[in-house]
Image (cartoon, rainbow over all chains, first blue to last red; front, top):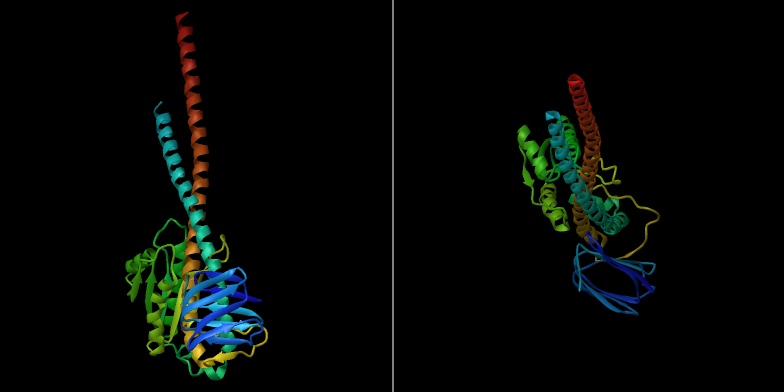
Length: 83
Length: 286
């Protein structure tokens, strides 16, 4: 299980548990499952998809970065909207 | 009973004023709630970006980033003063202006040229009154400042700093420590002071590179510092307005008690006098 949060300067769009996260990195999509190595990557623009047992949630983001460490995923972006 | 009528008029007038201040207090209370929610909502982003920069930062990299350039002397500095568009908030704006003037005076004593950027009608009005040249003014920010507002304020200043036209940028705003404590503060946002690392550094896989990540994150960090100043300033304003209106309502209550007491005393004095006159008149007839 991953602890995922999607934050923008104005608010936290998502916070909770998920099984996988797919995000638009600057050079193509990255998928993250649990036990991922600690990673920091720049994001491009596109959709972040957070998949959990209850279903999938999507967010459009532009810029910012994604951080993974100890099964904690943070999507930090200046512009984000819930789809 | 001329005095009585006059007192009645004043009681009515104070009652009406109290109605207005009480309403404004309630409006400010609800806006304050919303503004503090926004201050809280801004924290996770600020923490995340500060932690990440602290993790990536190293003195060797620092020399390559214009935003981290530490000028030996500050020849030209920009001061961004945040004030409110509206008044009736006690000493809120006066405190901010005082802080701004202290910062400007200090910079000028050290021999730098200061360009002034003012946000909010109250600040604009003040600096126009004292006849100080102001580089830019903004009075169009509402009570819900957005991250876009912040970047429109600071992007030009960041450009100036990168090109070397500015050597430092300060923001004057009120810190929102609590509802009762919103002191004015002056913060230097440029050059960026790299945040401190808390705990051990982690070894991350970096894509594309630490340098590239910092290139993106440093401007975002500066923009966020201004966004935070905007939301905290707004919350500070609502808190100050609420306190001012609460004091006004309390004072009106006190004045009313006194006025009513005086009125009743005058009324009773008159009744006593009338009775005395009647009794006197009746006695004269006997």
